[in-house]
Image (tube, one colour):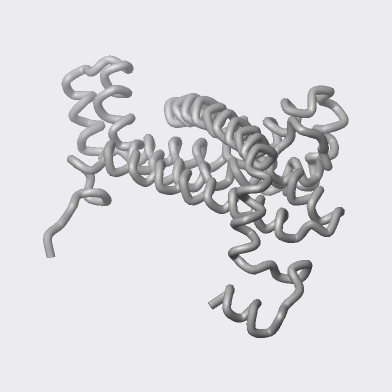
Length: 241
């Protein structure tokens, strides 16, 4: 329908390019766009990995120590509610390496869902099971391994689906704010560069790759959630009918 309407109304390509022209541009600029896509993928996955490590570890500490949670959780909330587009210029000023500055921005966006859901999940363990572990004098490691972590897994997997998309959004927004240019940059730079040069088909091609990357991340995290929870948790058990 898009292709037909653009052809029927003779819409100029600098307003809305036809899908065929976008596909042609994608093929012609494949090397440049894929290099930028790899940069964005690396930035997104690194920030997501750091968010997982930091969020899970801190969430575990919060679940085990109420005082520590009351001391540090407000700072995590402040970082979450402050738009990354507002603090990205400061990060770019204080961090000399542009890639690390972009990484921090993307990490800030993806970190809070992991932290919050992990802490809530660990505190959501059934109180009867908690009493049972206490009755049998379970060690802190046994309590963590056999009670708290399984209880937090569904919450963590839900947070992972959210954080994956947020890491990509944070990476793109940070690069928009940074206004980086050159060959070793991401898809956001290609979008900015194309808009400045009025190369709208190339801009749509870069936007298409960003969207595809987001879809792949969501599908991957959904598959991981089914693989981890599918055999035992109600949210992922397959039902007939």
